Image (cartoon, rainbow, N blue to C red; front, side, top):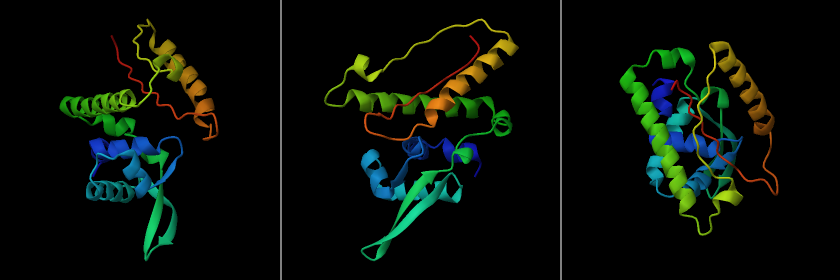
Length: 173
């Protein structure tokens, strides 16, 4: 199975998203985060991600005669590379984008279903901006953005910190 086939399955992509930010989760933790996914399906998809080397076992402990595994994301294996992406056809890119947008919508729906929401306090927003950039300026912009993000991606969970999702889509206008 290619990385694209592995990652662009809606449930597998949600599992990957749940583990973003250097989180380690057991299947019980994943079931709590993805309560709408049947347990057998969740176990099957976690196994596929382990087999595809997108997830790895971070720890294992014996619980009531069985082993409970804690998983972590292998970030280097959790994205479709440029070469593989270049080999995808238009319909495959369309399907990948649809999966991505559907997951964004589902994330936003879960946020809106919370008991108390405050978009301003929570920093929730979505916007679109147009920039006129040469290829060189665009590459410089991406380098700058990467630097800003890398400094924050290194943050570990701590009291007062909220896990926030930042999703980006970049395309010519």
